[in-house]
Image (cartoon, rainbow, N blue to C red; front, top):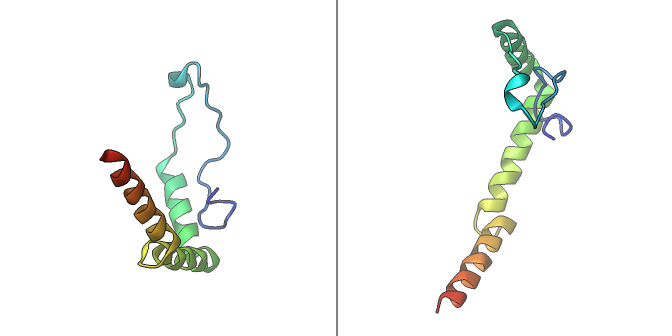
Length: 84
């Protein structure tokens, strides 16, 4: 999802996972692939700008008056009302 939103880059997307036997599909990401990915990420100004924008939006939701802040308050009220 973060790749689709433009918040990250893909290091290795050509792998499959066998959920019935998870140890059989060991995928190794080489140091060179990691280095290339980090360089691409650090040089991509668009990704950095989107990450910064999402960071601001995320902080706003958990600050007082934000949607997540309010939801947590409602959840706590509901829990406390059901305890007694």
